[in-house]
Length: 560
Image (cartoon, helix red, strand yellow):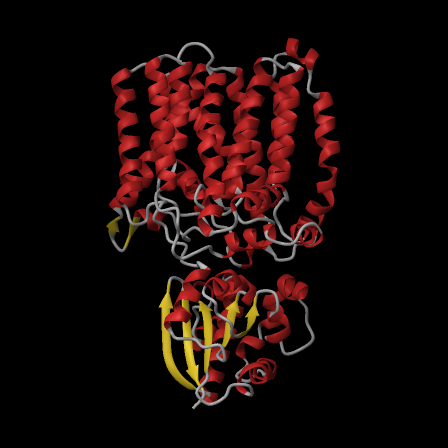
């Protein structure tokens, strides 16, 4: 690397750090998935910790990483977010190495700097570098798997093969569906490596990966054969998610982080007008990158077909699983493939012969991406975790909650808010009708969680039409109405994004078979619980209004 390239690389790293540090301290706190990640890592070691890891749907490595991080740097929100920032920054360097390994001669340095730059300004990676989740570290490990796969492809020495084995194992233990990527990656390597190189094959390494992954088999079997929740209960599959997958990765406009909009076309054209902003900042950068991907394949190198095979096999496997309701099709669940796409985009750009056109494309892509990240209120660094648990606690403080007051949480259990209630020295009685216990409170007959998630729409069809539900009424009376004294307050915390149907709208949906089958069970059962709780509370207590904050609405009642 000459002095100019060294300077460019340093500037790229600094830009990547600056973009990831900007607004990293989120005032809304952690949202549910982040909070759950922290709470598992925070469990007492070893018994409670291992039990918590085993009962979660994600592979265990990240919880070990986060627990080690917390032992050194504590568990403030900003420290937890920096635990994702660090692998996010390191990934800029590993992607540089990947591109350098792909093009070892002509264009190698340019390709490497391009891959590092794309990684540094990727809105998708910036977002997850500020999130207390597994995906930033997953990307880093995936890039190392890609790097050593390319090294094995070029030189299958024992050292390269065993390092590939090591990082493949780490990926399997980091991401629940990482085994899919590793399986196809190893198979494609064996299939596409030059025949003369197969004398030093990967057979021993494949055996090592299989044997060392065996402890994870019971976990994966239980997860996919006997899921705790059916995956489409809140986010049914739509073909629009395929388009949002590419705009999420190639543009700074993120739409499929937790659940994509139902229609991609409506993002482009809606209400008889074009969405110019989405076209410019999402469609244009995506089309540039897709064009560069196509350009990358013009050199006809064997390694391209190896990478294409890995991408297609992994992508189609997850797509088929989503079609059969085994997994939600979210962009982040296929993050293992992102290093391949970044590499090929960098290859396409660096090998382009038309220098003026090359500079023009790079300028448009860079300006649009950075302008959106810096200026837009929906920038990846400005995206508010509207489900952040600190929002609720801050609102309760502003609503002047007292130690004798009572809170009912809908959808999440009280434990989801304990980090922030302790932070504010709040102590009050709380209970919940949440996604874990609702079958025992909402369903009038004997039931369990497994039945509710497997056959909920059939079981609850008539329940949703009930005007009187003794189970909910008894729960409210036993835990709240009979315990609240004059002047004491009762707060009901609702998550608006999953309980938005009014009583009349819910009844109309239930009586319309087509609509009832289409709408996820999550929205139906939580809307019913919320409507019933509010109606019952208004007959027993004085309603004092509500407070909206993010995706939350907090209702206030008082004993007259």
